[in-house]
Length: 308
Image 1 (cartoon, rainbow, N blue to C red):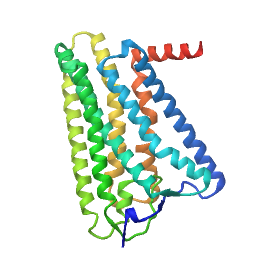
Image 2: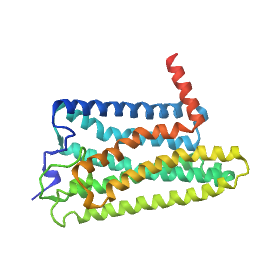
Image 3: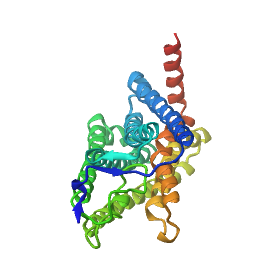
């Protein structure tokens, strides 16, 4: 019996076992990663450089883009490097860092999406108090709280997971160091401490989900009472991108972690991991800018200035 910290390296699952398919996997992940870098980088630059976007809504959108950029950079580059070098190994310290950072960014994103729902709620349901409730100091505190909650969750899970004893070797059925896959290597009953930590995390995520749902119930009630069609259209344009991001994030993560064990398989786990760890950071920038005219205009000006 040994602990996670006693291994020099872990073995991740490979997407392909032939050289041609490995290079194909590398090319596909490279394209996805570059698209995520470009899209999130453009949003970060546009919000930072355009004074008109220096509002709470875009301040939180900038942090969402930072989290998406960081989360996809935690998993995808290592997977690409392994395919290119024809290996599946990841060092012990690399596995710990990957687990910690991914848990940090995912947990922080959940908290930030909740804060963004509160921002929409105040903007539509309590517009006269918007400047008071969401001033500069309040926005900074809420963003800092989202990052701090992610850090604490990640620290808790990483410390717990890397202290449990192992009986099942060091082979992970995933393309990155994922907590549930590491728990499968643990000895009987030794993983219960981390399971309770995961239960706490799920409860926290469920609390965020309930807050978002209640916020949007109030928002849609207020929007439907608006006499102006233009006002309703503006309100929906503000809320629908955030709602699409929340739906994508929650649906993929919930199905990946809470699916019935009877339908679980290594292939399905791998596909679901790609859906919740790779797809949202790539798609979120397009969802956020799809119906947002101010952001579209800022991006167009940014691209025109680059071309000049």
